[in-house]
Length: 167
Image (cartoon, rainbow, N blue to C red; front, top):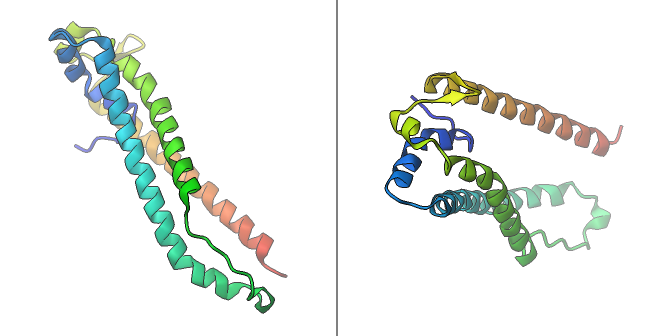
């Protein structure tokens, strides 16, 4: 079975691990710190991938964009390569995102009821749920969010195309 890769599903799937650590004597701060480090690593990998993809995209699209400019702009020199400010901004944004989206699940994961977590009971609002139902709900949520972002991106691209197209 595939697991959704959402920050909400990860603490639920690792609840037993956290309960074991707490039962063996780990402090709450150690569990929170571990979750935050994991979240920051994921954010750093995403930031690095974003910078790499942006560099490749610029290298690919710059000649196409320059060929579409009017000839009167031929003397204009554009430097579109990422510089240190872009790197620092991306690093700062990834750190803030890693902390913001990792702190709440880390705090929540550090305070499980150890006995029920070791028995692998799951409840939401006092109702027992199965892991499969929770996974299915999170996958549906993830697909709906991706679809919404895809439609928003398509509408933005269409608006941009209409704005730049002379008619």
